[in-house]
Amino acid sequence: MQLIITAEGQVRCIYAEAIDLTVIGRLRITRGSFVEPNAAGQWIVDLSPVRGPRLGPFAQRSAALQSEIDWLELHWLSSDH
Image (cartoon, rainbow, N blue to C red; front, top):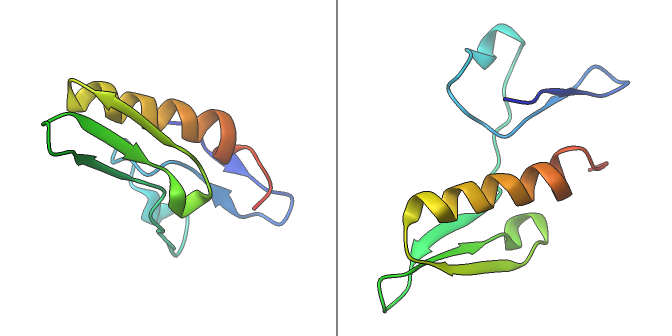
């Protein structure tokens, strides 16, 4: 789990339960994407909440979730928002 600490002392991350984030301070959690099945039973990643693309389709949900994390880490986590 990557934690990005800004010069202002704010912490950004892709939420996971690997550590108890409440020990850092008050949380503000916002949705980064939607991972949903399509009519064919394949998985689509919709990153529109962070102005990102749609990814997929993926045969397995786990592959879609990993793709979601990879994109967020590369394009969203370390950028200035």
